[in-house]
Length: 567
Image (cartoon, rainbow, N blue to C red; front, side):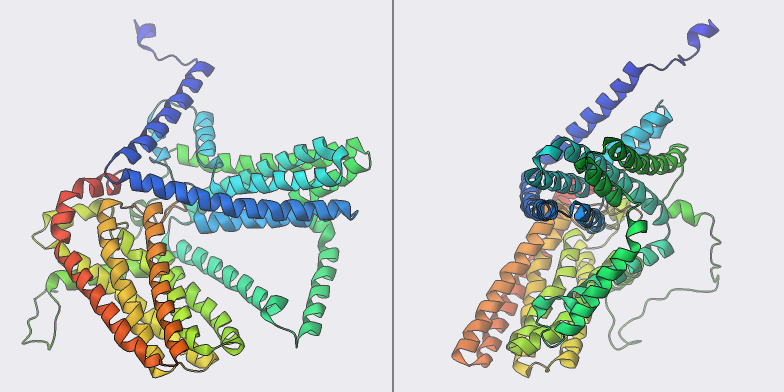
């Protein structure tokens, strides 16, 4: 009887295949069902448009990578293919940082509750993110480089495609290994701040180098110094070549040179060296997943358990302040939500990056652009660019709330006050951005005229109110749960992101048309009444949308809770 009740410990390969099949069917059904719910058709359109945009960018990069590889092979410098491969590697990692690892329709860590081998769990976690946009782009660029080399040296087609297949796999495994550990490091707020700071410094450094040494920006007076810097970089590359050549791009390039010279054994040795890197990356990834398999919890709540709570003053009391006690006070609901929102902003390093990066780019480019053309459009253009980091925030107002968003519906408050408070915070962040941009433009170039300043502020106010009006409804209809400890977290759904960009581009086209008309007529004062009417119309739409947000939220609360309360 005991033997009959004992579990079967001889796990078979058919059971493992059945688990993979069940998980694949689960993911497929959840994905399909997401497009069947209310608003799913729009999300599907947004996904298709995003894929088409990604495909267009990918084909352009593939043409460039294939051309560079073919040029290196035809010129007799096949060893320089490692520069192309290093470029592919760097581009993949930058894409991973900007886009993130692919999100999943359910938390894969929930699978550890079921009878499953550790090896099966590791493989499932590997394949969950193997087909990320960055890895797909890396594979396409690698095969494009292989096609370019094949066109230049047809006899190397087999060796080239075999080498690029190994390189693409190594690149993908490195990404999975790196971001699996990044998720571990991002489990604490301090680590998220450090990581965001590193990304910010790297991004700004790349843009500064591009602006400083790229001849396309008109550095004609400093061409001698630029060539000296380029020669120094080439000399450094030659000195570092022995070290650089020991990594996968260098190993692949050396193996192709050996194959072209007919040294088959040497080709196999270097290919094996690149394969060892792939195995090493997979081993580190498996180590991370094995710790996760044992039940490690990376949430902020779990990490806060070990911290010592701050003492609470028992004598502290909260007394409501009236207008007689202070000159002006906000309603208690709005004030409380504003305080909470600013606290979340302070802890969300992604918002800080979205605010600081555009301002830094404006500082780098504004002075040069102002000296090369009419400076009257520089401030409005910089203003439109900086709003790209603020406008999308209103399209997912409850993303950081999670399941706590339900309390807004249970509390005796009006949801319009909650949305108004969240919008006030977004407007305040936008005002800080606009002020910083104005100070930078005034410092690095000529200060804009008062007419341009007022017109730009009116346009920015109208754009923010129109974008926020749509964003408030999208926050209910298409929410996106944000996990600050996961690199797969997105600020908004794909369709909401497209709508945000579309509104900003549309308003920029309207404002730019008015500006060009005023410049053509040599009457900048025309901008003030036109943009004032534009801002008043946007204010009317915003107030109307805010007044109807309570009934809209109550009618679609199930859609909101379904996304924010899932694990």
